[in-house]
Image (tube, rainbow, N blue to C red; front, side, top):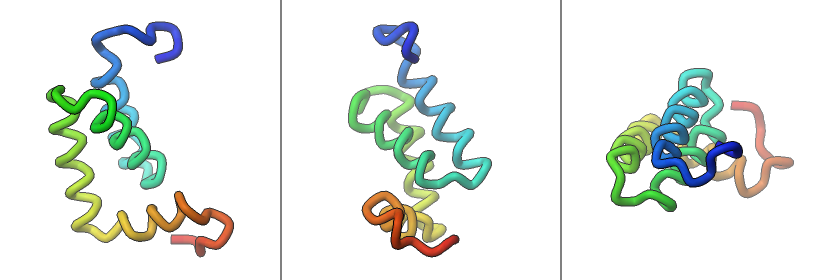
Length: 79
């Protein structure tokens, strides 16, 4: 990402990073990567797939805890 900041493949790379973090249960980093796709590339196919994964995370209850971790990591109990 740093080597090719203007590449058209950035949205897909961020999406894959988000998916990888999700698979290893690092939900806060997954959410950051997926949110980055949504915020920076909203018209891309990657954004649609990121939104689907975020919805899946929200349904599973990860969102509230991970939002807490993002806002107050020093106060968050282990998940």
